[in-house]
Image 1 (tube, helix red, strand yellow):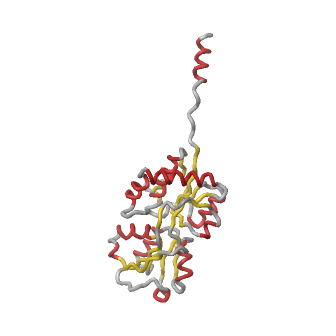
Image 2 (cartoon, rainbow, N blue to C red):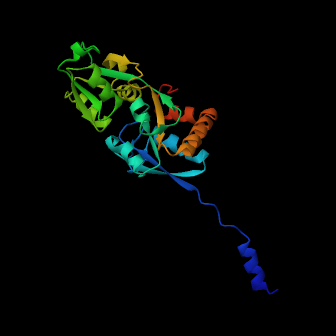
Image 3 (cartoon, rainbow, N blue to C red):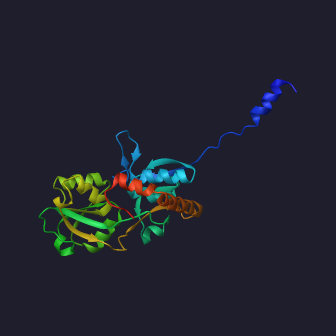
Length: 249
């Protein structure tokens, strides 16, 4: 056999390297420190780092798609992306539309006001007061039911909500404790504000999960397995400490 043919046989015997399958992650990118746009214009935050760690365990390549919160479930259903990795509270209403993994962290509702406000988490005490909430969030839905008489001001971005609160345009803000507490810590400390009240209510939601389409049970199972792995090997704990001063689990 001539040498050129031998070389041809040798070259064809090597298989092409496998290309990792992409997994498209949908994220709000407006909920720091969990998800936001960094100084370079890239999505970043706890959710993004957790998502990338899950993809590594599943031998998948994460790609990220920013999506406004109000349209994030319709965008998943329209196959704009495969996963909602964006600190989504698991509620019965959402479970009718999407499938959730097991919770990857836990939270509760927290309302704060300026020091000396005298406000209480009661409908009568908040009547006529302007309360900042996330647009389309479970907190907005809960407040509409339980705080009738308050003026709810919905925001697409928690940054905008907290900015208006700082500037005196809101009497209080009501959101997940895991978003409120880090903000207070960087703006004078928790003691610089009144804790109006905490809400530990299943109707509000305390479990935060990863959402997939209902017809994607295999992906849901893969994410659950990968989540168990990053909790067991310490990855989750390390990322928790990177972004927050308190435990999420």
